[in-house]
Picture 1 (spheres, rainbow, N blue to C red):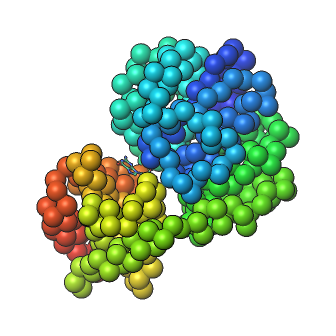
Picture 2: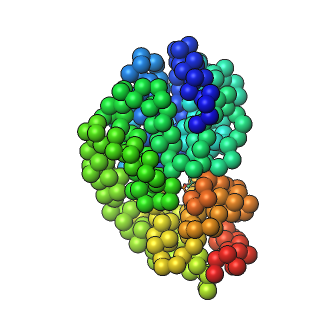
Picture 3: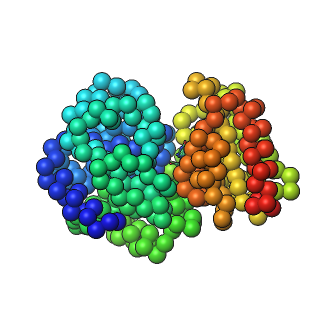
Length: 336
Ligand code: 5GP
Ligand code: MN
C-alpha cells in the first residue's frame, strides 16, 4: 500500500455522506466478501453505504451477512443509477477495469463521486482518484483487511470477519494457492479470533451443490480434452448441456480446477457457451510459469492474474474451441 493511501482515504471518509461499493459483474466470494465486509465496517462508523452489483450472484453466496441488501443493477436500474449519481464516494472492489462492470460502466463517467479502487489484478486502469493495487496479494479481502487494520482494527467483528474470511478462502483455493502467505494465515488467525464459524463458511460455499450442478460437473469431466503430448487440457460446456442440468449462475464455478488436478498439467481452460449473451465465457488456470493473464489478454479479450484469468469470445463454441486448440499449439514449447 502506498504511504499516502490511508491518509487520503481517511480524509475522504471524513467528508463523505453517501457511499456506494461496487463488485465486478458475476461477483465471486472475494468480490462480494470485500464489498459486504467493507460496508459493515463503514457502517460501524455511521456512514451510509450501499452495495450495487452489476448483476445477480450465485446461490452459494446467498448467505453472506448483508447479501439481501445488495442492489442489483440488472434488476433495479433506476435505483442503482440514483445511488451512483448521488454518491460522494464510490469504491470499486476486486476489479481494475470498468469493462468488468458492463453495462453499468456507462454511468460511472457521469458520477461526481470520488472513486477509490482496491484490487489485486494485474495492470490497473486509470479511472480511480485513489488506488490501492497489489497483484502480489491473493485476494481483495486481504487488502480490505489491511485497510481496516490501518483505520481501526478493533471494529472488526464476527460479521465483518465472516465476509473477509470468505473472500480469502475462495480466492486462495482454500489456502492452497501460491499467493497464500504467512501474513494471509496471520490475518485468518485474527479473523478466527472474532468467533467466525469457518467450517460452516466452507460448507456454505463448497458443499451446497444442487443435483443439477453435480450432473453438470459429470458432463464437464466427460468433455475434457487433453491436447496431445502437451500438458494442457480444455473443457467445453454447450448451452444445451447447461440446460439439460438446469444450469443456475455459479454452477460452473471451480470446474476448471479439475483440469489442473491432472498430474503434470500446466494449463487448464474451460469454455462455457452463453447463448443469451451470444458469447463464450472462458476461464484459464495455470501452474508454474505459464502466464494466463498474458494468454487471455493476447488471444481472448481478457486478463486476470498470472495463474488465473478469464476471457470472452464472440465466435461460436465450435470456432472458439478450435481457436483454443490452435492457440495452445502455438505455445507447445512452454507446455511440454
Ligand atoms: P474466473 O475464471 O474465476 O471467472 O476469473 C479468474 C480471474 O480472472 C479473476 O480474478 C477474474 O476477476 C479475472 N477475469 C475473469 N474474466 C475476466 C475477463 O473477461 N476480463 C478480465 N480482464 N479479467 C477477467
Ligand atoms: Mn479476487
